[in-house]
Image (cartoon, rainbow, N blue to C red; front, top):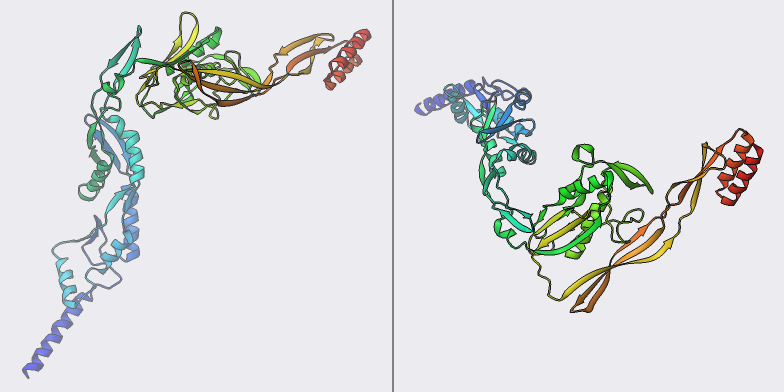
Length: 475
């Protein structure tokens, strides 16, 4: 009898537990259950997912204020690409609360919800790559950065200004800080982050620059005059003062561009498709060419160099370095173990000069020279064009001719007066350009005019001369 009573009591208690927990169907989340800060009580899995998406749409609109000392910048969680991590897993966990295990376990979990809410963790995170880019673009400039040592040559003497330590944004730690704030302190409104900073050492120190004393290479070309002169002066001033650390490279285009009026350039002649046309920055190629030769004498590493489409007058063939758009550039690298300093400008003798200074570690008695060798030439022809505004018999050259050629540049090294090496350092091809001859076709006789035009179409000078004589007799 006692055993039966115990059994009946056990069944009754389990029946009571079953009835209690059965009030919460398996397809719905129990009351007072939250996913992160989102109340999903009584929802199905799909309803909970929809509710999370609704909150997410609001969360990404939140503004993020990034502060560094007394400066700040703003972005949004959308820009940082806020993410709900394991959203479906969190919904599954919320749905299973109070639904798994023994009846007693389920009963205790559900009873607990009467007193306190159950929070299912769902970590909030940001996209590290996107956040890093934004921090670099917007936050890093807020810091008081280190100041590199600088060097300047004044009246033939080098003057060095000391470097200073500074601060920069610790990007990796700041990303971690943002995510901690999102998961612990954030009220789902504006988020303010005090950017974490770290000490920044200067890239160039006084000790780095103290060895800049020797002239490693120098070269000059005649600066001429007019608007082109202004462009040479402006371009050289942008390059002058450049310091390259060991292994560091420079691009003449990147230093001197953009070529427009707003950046100090004037309209002047330059090569374009085999013709001389006016363009802003015309003459910048003479700047790169002059520097190229100084770089050669300094024996720096040339990483990119192009010849002009047609030969230039201010240096011998194969000694030029063209700049054209984003497809022709002159680039070089400091191949010394010490930094170099570049000085450039137009002197009182109207010479455009570049000089490169550093620590000369080359052996004493070693000298270099360069020889330009023309391998072949292609003489220009003549192209005849009809000019209906000029009288028959008028023949005028309106475009200069350029001889085409192939050339190469030799580097000759001597030691104590004896040649130790001779090698080709570049090969160049220059296009020929025919002279343009304007031939008048204006006449009171249409027959005479047509006669000369037909002769011009043949591009035969003797036929053109004969046609002009006949045409003049027909007027």
